[in-house]
Image (cartoon, rainbow, N blue to C red):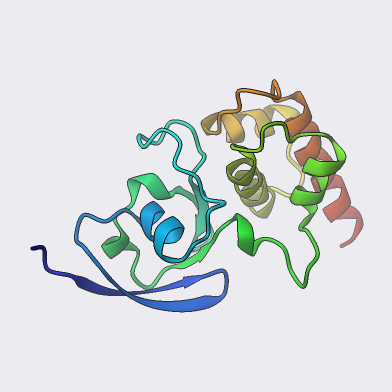
Length: 160
């Protein structure tokens, strides 16, 4: 039997005190313990971006992080992007621009797009494509995803 480690995470503004196994992935804690299933298990090798989260203000892949190393982190999942029942600009733009097909990659795409706009509030198309290259979609062809992020950036800059 493995020794459990006590950790504290703040996820979507809520604090969690958890006992985790030393080899337990942050992805599994988020999905199985906290029941935040927007963070998806896609490839398990940091290739698809389906498990994208914002951790301490940076885009990270939860499938590659041991939960014990994340103790003390402030994490935002796709579920934490909406505020007071209102979608964030990237979420709304994904709907408006039809950037959602099957929906599997959408939470990771929205998290990545939101993080990009936190870092660069006026990215070019090339900058969006470069930033999003770690997030795979098998359905949309990416054009609508890029358009959604461009639209969200415009909306965010207009409302400042």
